[in-house]
Image 1 (tube, rainbow, N blue to C red):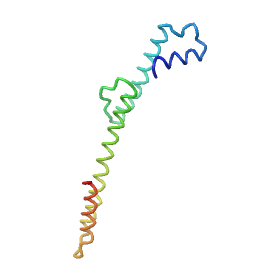
Image 2 (image 1 turned 180 degrees about the vertical axis):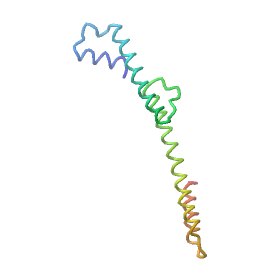
Image 3 (image 1 turned 90 degrees about the vertical axis):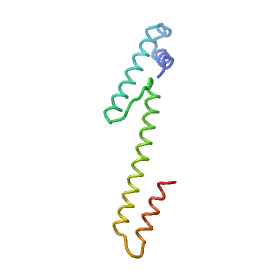
Image 4 (image 1 turned 30 degrees about the vertical axis):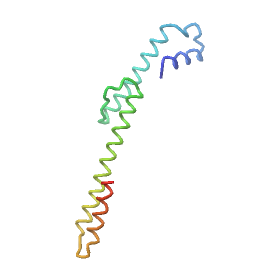
Length: 109
């Protein structure tokens, strides 16, 4: 939320005499900082880094990157676990071995 957003909301709430007052700008700054800190605290409580996010948008971008990277790792680990199961059921015919090769090949694309 920007200072302009807060000023607009102040006008909508009927604070016409304070619309351009420095108190609204200060309030907007404090509100944005509180929102940012609440999000940063939540991210840290879940084990995510907050980086140098100066705004909520920065924090959300950083969080999105971490989630994407984490999902990629999880997918690779799951594929390898599936391939390992195929390896455990290896037979003379080689069907399980071919399945394991195909699963691992998907991770290399």
